[in-house]
Length: 108
Image (cartoon, rainbow, N blue to C red):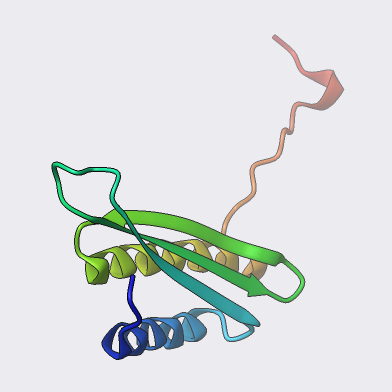
């Protein structure tokens, strides 16, 4: 899609909100593509978000197609937000990890 200062401002705003969840983000790349696979529905916009965090590498990649590019960007960042929150909770130990307590001495 053509470059838009309004879209840039919206993406920057949403990226700043990600830093509140995980302040050690080293990079956040966002690509908004216009795809016209659905001629009957009009143009579709697809958003790709890639976030890197030290020690974990690539944390999130997501794609969200929608007819409205602003809604596609919002949906993609909502997904990234949820995935980063889950990653932070795992790092802090707030999520219980399931272990197999049966071992070799399991009884029927």
